[in-house]
Image (cartoon, rainbow, N blue to C red; front, side, top):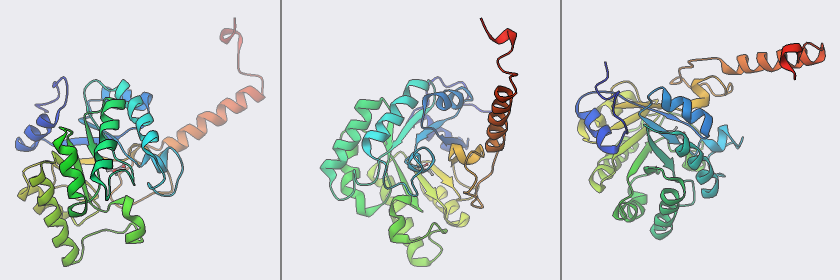
Length: 271
Ligand code: KIV
């Protein structure tokens, strides 16, 4: 039974307490008002307005094209729906790398124009300056290491990361750096479960995994993947809780048939 179920508002402090009390943190993406309302009503701990919106909402092949304005549109819709969960918003590609002033401006726009409680960004040492500057403005940051989709053109593929010693060592250093800098949590994406478990033990802030095994402090999935709305994406780590694409297609076909055979609307469905 959850000790934190009745928390009226999940904050970064609540997440820290959950880690310290061995209660798993659950995070799910949302990009619009209606879905975010349902997710929040189900008692989600963290709602992530992920830049995966670029794929699942806009149909791009990667997360690179989505803009800050798009993210602000999605995030403000989500914030209007959520009463309990902590809302975290991804800083999109090109809005924080290599220029810490731009990073701060981008983060401030997210906080001011959406009402979200925190931002997430990808990378470790290479974005240290940006992280320092954003944190200095009192904006909470969730880090993201391992498979970082904004760097897909550097990696070339979406295969599991940090399987080689050199990359694993860099990831361990980066995770410690993010903790030292003052990030409140870290997402680890698609890395060996053993490495993620080691980091969740060593690091005091919550570690949220996606394809990083069970021995971390919480899990995150992309909403459209776990509901089975997206069909073409099937990594090993993904558990599908529903087959909504089949259900939606069935409902839409029934509607089409009903209209064509003059069954809809019937007498009770008109004025
Ligand atoms: O954008 C996103 O959905 C994410 C999750 C996969 C963690 O960053």
